[in-house]
Length: 210
Image (cartoon, rainbow, N blue to C red; front, side, top):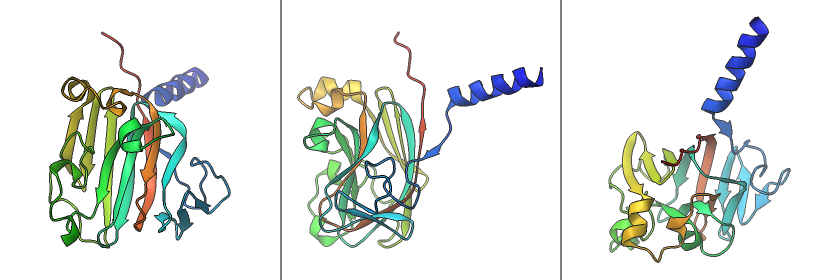
């Protein structure tokens, strides 16, 4: 009986999903370079993934559909990066997939940003609430939830962006990435220095078609 209960509990836990590390703090396992400390213009140092001036797109080995992603990030003055979601692995992640802005939008050089370009915005598609970034040089906590067509971004405990991809497809039908429901997770570098740590993911069960 105990063995049966343990088996049931194990199955229930697996179905519910648990957070697992996407970054082990030591190398680029899960990011296409197990055992290596440099990949795609990023480097592992002091338990972080930190971009260099040569940073490009760093993507996960695996593709994901429905999930909750937790990570922490630290910006340098004027830094610009992005979180690619549903990225197919080629092309511009902001268009072949979608890109959630990671940006020091407090910097004077960004005085004339469009609404969707501020931190947390879904690039070219949906704007995020402003004013919830910590001062440059401090660690921020971000949670991104993708559940079917729904995308939500929480920054330092506040929900700053929510989007429904089905609705976006009606108003902006030319955006190919918004049609996707699976792909790689990626950091989309623009040659600026940003650090990431404590990257964890919990996969969610697929929604049943109605």
